Image 1 (cartoon, rainbow, N blue to C red):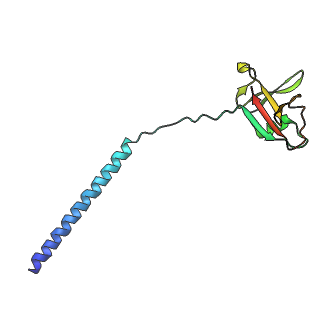
Image 2: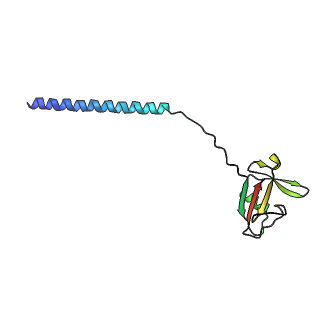
Image 3: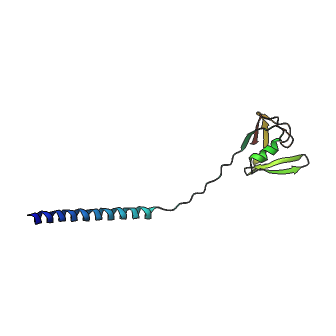
Length: 129
């Protein structure tokens, strides 16, 4: 009787082992199928182009000097009247009849950015308009 009971125990363990192997195989198969159905995609992220640049004025610095310090995409040109901002963030003056102008504490400046010297603490805003 002991042999019969022991044989049943081995058969039960063998069945459990076979079921475990089958389940592991199904799991591996499912994982392999999931990996093979995943497509590699690439996405081009476009940089955000803003039409304004704002900063706080620093005592004794011109608006243009500070603009060049806070934004590396600034392109300037020099004309008879002085240096002016040609483009910021890829937005070029003259396109779509828009130009870069700057404001001090909400009021359009009456002089160029290379002439205006900050008193310190004022809000400087460059707008493409």
